[in-house]
Image (cartoon, rainbow, N blue to C red; front, top):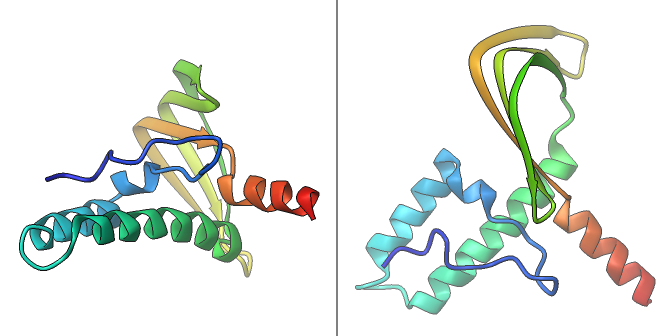
Length: 130
């Protein structure tokens, strides 16, 4: 069993799964894969992954205070299902950390995936209903 891509985005559950492709998401998925056949029901594993998706979105929107600017040569871009993907070459990041320190990072290739903030969109939708 492998649950990495089990959930599909829908208008009723607008939480994105792209954080599952991070190292912490991969590690969680692998751990659940090992537990499902023996100790954890598959439904519980899916619930854990769903909560991970929501928690990552909330945590990054609330806790991350650094600012990043970047520039590079745009190689390719695409827009599919409200997800923008940019591929840059010779990219340079300028990372500004709260407190004023600045760090520069240069990379040969960079892939950026930009999606609508599902948590904020859901909050706005619920606020309109109230």
